[in-house]
Image 1 (cartoon, rainbow, N blue to C red):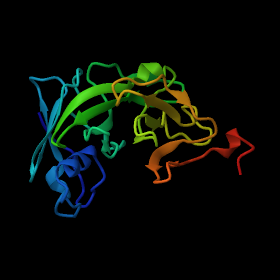
Image 2: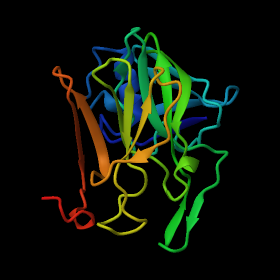
Image 3: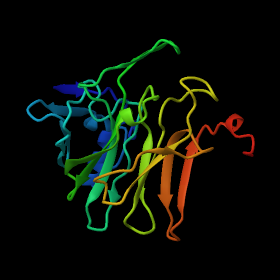
Image 4: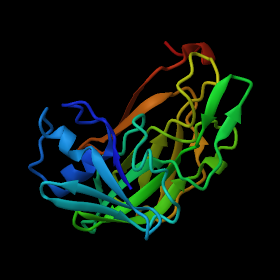
Length: 239
């Protein structure tokens, strides 16, 4: 199934495909002429979850995800962003996506008058060359957050200063007002001690959140977290 995502020229960070291509093509530059070339993906019907991204430097493939992707979304729904590739100590790369699958039921929430929505899961792929990415793990499944209408979505991933532990910070639900509905949620976090193969049960980060988390590991070993929409009303002690 070939699907055109309808990117506008220059929308270089609008989908996960550009980042996947950039991992394989160090010289790839976002531009008004380059971006539309990466607006098409192929869902390989013979291999559930197999996705190919055609690019000028060759084909970037995502293999082995054990669930069929929704063809209209593929690797992205136009709302979430994949993480930048993280290089592990053995030289391999990890990249994670918030994926919607065709074998899961849409959430229905009459309380907040929201449309039916397929919940997202945070899925990790591993590569040794930046071109072939194999499914490694599902870091967070939406069933681990049963109260979440959208499922875990915007997120980031980083190594910690020990160069062994991985941390993933996520937006666990909606972009509701403060507090709004679905209920406003602070960021959640999960950790891996085995290079992304397994992950801890996600738990909240009190008083921090709630959208577009970004992580930056400094040379000093400190880890910075940035994001948006902190709801001070939920924590009067915040300045």
